[in-house]
Length: 431
Image 1 (tube, rainbow, N blue to C red):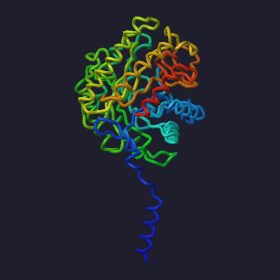
Image 2: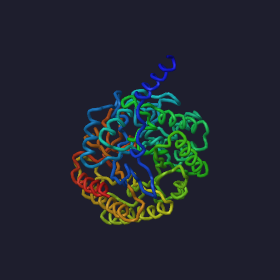
Image 3: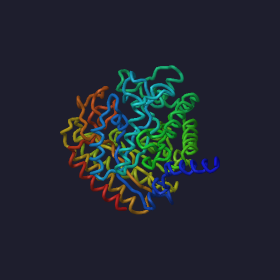
Image 4: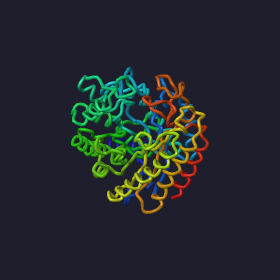
């Protein structure tokens, strides 16, 4: 009788257990291409880095707005979002998106974790895929500099716009993270926590959730003067993630070679060569790289040529690696560099069209390009002080706290930009 009851209870427990997600529902890589549900997967996506905070029930959260933003993006044909998954405190530090998810090493903000749960659940309802950033070279989410500061108890030498800020000092401090064993250990601990987490909304563990397309090691990690440590960290962290989660893709978050690869310590082919890195990524920033001066037709034309050439060169390198390529950041300011949300976007629209046209040409031929995410969706969010910096309590826009608000934001009123996005989501989706 006891054996019969145990068998019965075992069958009942088995019946109640959630069914594992079908492997076909996860984005895979096959012969250098993305595959989803047995078909090629191509997309034009968006950066919605602040989604985790917008989804929170705590400060900065607005779930009603989140739903509207996801619906707007879905209506544009956007089904892939690049989001921040882990952000670091303390919240009193400057130039940060706050509140942070990781308040101090191994201490997490419950409201933000539940916000990430909710964001992924809402994306899943809409058939969207998430690329989840796990760290950041830059200060606007804490990132590597904060982990290193926690470890060494040294203050972060913030770069501009911090008064008297020094980029060289910041770059050196942030890149010291790669050789800081304690800092890397804390980062790995947060990654493990997230991958093993059970979503409080869907009751599905993150490692089993097909809404997640990929884990991204960091936003724009650079080697700087720690190139050896940097490449070792890329290899080890990608392998560490794969040991915890064989279901999801892994990528680096790299900008590619940038306009000046030597000082950044970047090598596109080397950085994306580890077997645990499933696909390659690049970012294209004409203004930041000195190619484009807002309002200058001459520099606009040359920046388009340079951007297309940059994309073509990295596509060729990705094909040599046998891995898909995603342009996961590209953007341009509003016409004449205005931060006014009502400012014209004709040149930005033309730039979006040029980048997406070339990406589509490569994706539809023998190229490695599989997708592109524009930077960045602001939707109904508007800066309280256009051209100034974000402060806690301000609406979320597409511009991180350390950048003038309104610079690269795509608003729900930007009809021209949205027309371009809609055109290419349809084209990519039909591939």
